[in-house]
Length: 291
Image 1 (cartoon, rainbow, N blue to C red):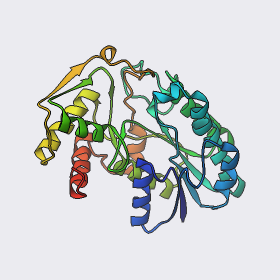
Image 2: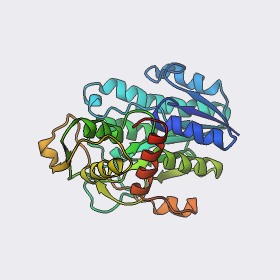
Image 3: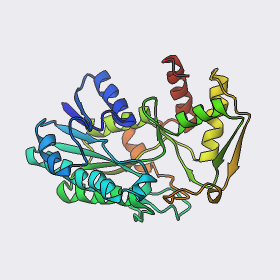
């Protein structure tokens, strides 16, 4: 099997490349330098050139707040190029896994979102990803779509690394406590992707780690665990604040916990709790000399 990973320089694409290589699967990684998703008219041909049995599309515009200022670019990358990837895959009979997001939901319910729940994005980023899903399905009804949330990993920029940096600089951190979801470590997401493509599972799937947290809960655990592992933590307090005290250009869903009932049955193993995976990520980061 040969797998093409788009967005290979991003935090999830990078982790997936490592997992595929470790599994002795032939893998090709491409990123913006090789195929610019801001120019969707070139994407289908660029994908078809590789004729990979599976394409995993990790390429995306992910800057949630900036998307409100750059909607055309966000839609070109997340909607138009996602559809173009599907067109390229269809042209030679390949298989596609499209990575999507919890931001397609509005956060208005109080129980985990299932794959079939209605989408109602609050902003440009979520809308562009939702329309990207729809475009993929229109071209390849048998595609696999994996939605995830609160992604972090050893590579790239993310909430965990931001909290580590700020906690080393400040005496106190302030983090919102009224946005609820579940963190997802790229190592665990990549394992789920590997299972989906090895088993050739079409349809829509949700994956994060287990458990539920607010951003405050997540930040508090990052600081506690990092201090325990010997990171240079200066912060003595993590203070919870409401979202109203930290306004952002883009609205966030207040509740975006994704149901994993469907994927649990497919995986056949226990998905790690988010605290367990956070510990593994921090240990790996420290071992690599990135404290």
